[in-house]
Amino acid sequence: METIPRHFKTVVLDRAINILASIADLMIQMELHFEHHLDEDRLNRAMDLILDAEPVLGCRFVTRSFRPCWERLEKTSRRNFEFVSSREAYEFFKKGSIDPYLGPQVRACLWRKSEGDSLILKVAHNVSDAGGLKETAAGISRIYSRLAHEPEFVPDANTAGSRSVWQVMRHLPWHAYPQVLLYYFRKVLRNSIPLKTHTLPVEKTRTEGTTFALHHLPAGLVDQMMKYGKRNEGTLNDMILAAMFRAYSSSADWNGDSQLRFLTTVDLRRYLPSGSAGGICNLSAIENHHLGTDTGSGFNDTLLKVRKFTSSRKKNWIGFPDFLGVVPVLGHLPYRWLIGTGRKIAGLSMKADNMPNGITNMGLIDPSSIIFDKAPGKAWLLVPPSLPPQFVTGISGYRGTLTLSAGFEKESMKQVTPHDLFDTITEELMEVTS
Image (cartoon, rainbow, N blue to C red; front, side, top):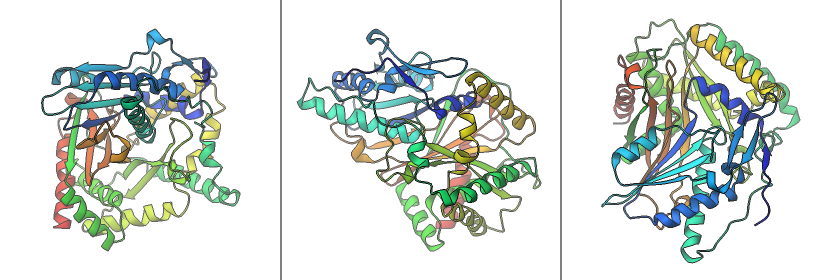
C-alpha cells in the first residue's frame, strides 16, 4: 500500500456542515438485519481496512481558526468495531453520537442474535452524507467479501479521489450561471417573505436521550403509490412530500396563515456520470419547497402543486443554486467566523419562527452493494437526530419498501409525535391509492 499522508485538507462542506450542529446530532446510520450470522473477525478486519481504503475515514477533525484539517489517527486510536449480544447494548450504540474530533469517522456495531445478526454502520456527517455512507457500506462489503478467500488482502488507498463540490460544479455549463444565480436570490426572498413558517410543535427545552421513530411503508403500498404517481406524473418523492404537507397542515395546529415550507435535500451525485463521488464526502444540496398557505381541496391538488415545483426545479439544475450563490463565499471565510455567524443566523431564524422542518430523501439502498456473505433481509437509513426545536424526517428505500425515520428527544414532542405524523402520512397515501 502507498504511503498515506498524515494530513488532508478539508473541503468547504466539511467545515460548513458544523453550522448544523446546533440543530442536529451530525451522524447518519445504516441499519442492516440479516437472516444469517456474520463473521465478526472478518468484519472487524474490514472495518479497520476501510480506514485506509478511504483515508479520510481514518482521521480526526482538527479545528483551526482559519482552516481545519483532517489528521490521520495512530493505529492504537482507530478502533471502530463493537460486538454485542444484547438489544440494550445495540440500542445504546445506535443512540450514541460519533465524535469527529476524536475519530475515526465510521463505526460499526454487530448484534449477534439466534435468528440472525443486526449491523449498524455509523458515519460522522462532517465527512459524509447519506450517499457517502452508502458508498462506505459498499466499500466495507467488498473488503469483507474479499477477505473470505484472501485473508491477507489490503485495499489500495484512495488518496487522489476528489471530495470537492467542483467534481459536480464542473458539469454546470457557463450559460446556465445567470439562471441559477437568479433562482438563488428568488429562493432567498421566497424563504423570507412572508416570514412565519409552520412547523411541528417541539418544546425548546432539551432533555438527555435520543430516541428513533421508524415507520415502514410495505412493498404493496409502495407499488400502489408508484402506479398512482405514474398516472398523475408524480414520483414517489412527490407523493410523500404531498402527504407530508397535508399531514403537517392537519395534525399540527396550522393556523392557515403561516407558510408551509420544507427544507429538502438533493444528492448531487445525480450529475456525475458514474453516480459516485471521487471519495467519501458530503455532496448534497438543500432545496426549499414552498407550498404557500393552500394545500388545495384534496390530495390530488396538493400533489399537483408539489409536482409542478419539483418538475420545474429538475429542469433547471436542481441543487445548484446554493453552490453557486453562497457556498463559494463560505469557502473563503475563516472557520470560527463561519461557524459562529452561521449558527447565529440559524438561531435568529428559529427565534422568528422561520426555520422550516426538514425532509431528506436518502435514496435507495442497493442490495447488491451490501453483501456480507448474503444480502440483508431488511435495511434502512437513519436520519441525523434533530435537536429541539427542529425536526427532520428521513426517507430511504430497500427492496420495494420505504422507511420513514426520525431521531428526536422524546420529552420534547408530546403534542404531535413522529409516530402520529407517520400514521397520518400513511393514512393519506393508503386512502388515495386504495
